[in-house]
Every structure is written in C-alpha cells, then in structure tokens.
Image (cartoon, rainbow, N blue to C red):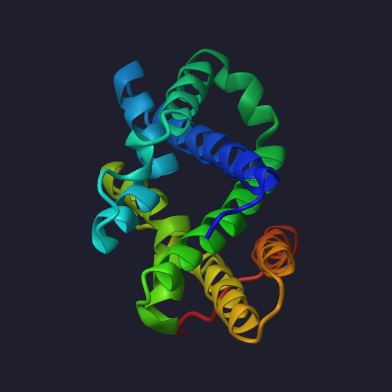
Length: 203
C-alpha cells in the first residue's frame, strides 16, 4: 500500500516527536549522550523495526530509508543540548507524539493487511508500531511501560486500527480511510491528555 507524500512527511514528524520523547526520558535519568541517543532512536523506530522483522520485511524500513535513522539521531542530539527548551514546550511535544501515534498505527495496520495476516493480526501490528518503541524505552529505564499503566494510549491505537481495517474492507477510499483513522487515534489520545482520561484500575 502506497501512502501519499503528506503521510510520509507526517511519519517523519512523528518519528522526530518519538525520538524527542525518548531522549527527554534519557535526560531525566541523567544518562550520557550515547544513552540519550540510544533511547531516542529506540523509541522512534523500535516498534516499526520489530514489526518488519515479524512479517519478514527484511531489511527493516530504517535500513531502506535512512531518513528515519538520521532524524532520530539528529533530534536526540538536539534534545541533549537543548532539553531545557524542549521540556518547556512539552505539551507541543505531546501533541506531535499523538499525531505520530496515529500515523504509526495506520501504517502498521496497513502492512498487516498487505501481508494478509487477518484483521486481529493487522491491528496488532498497528498497535506494535505505535507503542513498542515506547515500551522498550520504559523497560530500559526500569519503569513500567506507559501502555501497561492507566493511560489511554494503546487503546486509542486499537480503535483507530480497527476502524482502518473496517473502512478498507468496506471499500472506502484509501485517502479517507487513512485520514479518518489517524484523526481517531490522534483525537482520543489528545482528549485523554487534556481531560486526564484513564482506563479503569482495580480498587
């Protein structure tokens, strides 16, 4: 499935946002520059790389298009030097993160459909693409992954991923399916941040 150039552009923007969030986590843990860059890169491309390995897309996308790797490293280095400025704009970073989450989810789900692994498998690939980089980041810094806590994160990916699959199966145009699915994930995640929505926890 070939995505419009605008989706590719937003995919790179999402990659940058994920890299910044990973690098900020490294800064807060007082890591050195290598650790900060490593966390930034893993957060940005970890989910998509694991997805490609699972479906047999070898070599993974980061070795076919070096823009993702270059942007991840560059943003991580910039975060190392200008983290005070970036942290003051953290809400903007969360917005970009939410947009990247939506785009990563749709791209991952579409690859699942392309490889004919079924509805559930395709949506799982979408969730993996959007969340596994962050999970690896959290594990490396000895924290419970964000997606396993109360925050609405992976659940937003599930809703958007299933909508995308259903829309494509119903014959809705690719452009509309992509746009609406991305906006669903983006809107749910953004509202969860602004309204402090959380999933239920045991009492």
